[in-house]
Image (cartoon, rainbow, N blue to C red; front, side, top):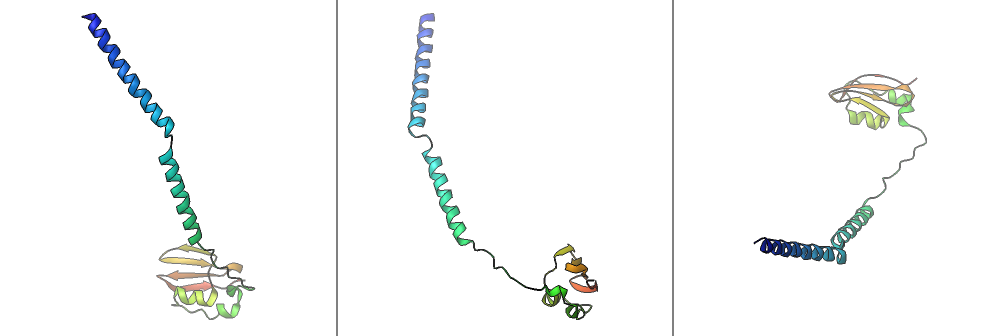
Length: 124
């Protein structure tokens, strides 16, 4: 009886070993073809996306609009953010949300409440 169990255990062990070595052989012969294929596909997709991206246009100006005192003196309470941008250009820093403070170069700032000019201080 013990001999039969011993032979049966050896048979299962041998079968497991054969399956194990067969799997290793498959992996060795085809190590990462799926992975390599996926990497190649991703590289191609990145190349296409890079070609689609264009460099943003650079706007070159000799003087900043916000430095013009005449434009600052055209500010009025109740002006919209878009009107201020048109008059003074983009601020270099914005703080807040519903009640916001826009900072311009040379010390000028504008206080907005709900998107409308409430007060301002001209640059030095």
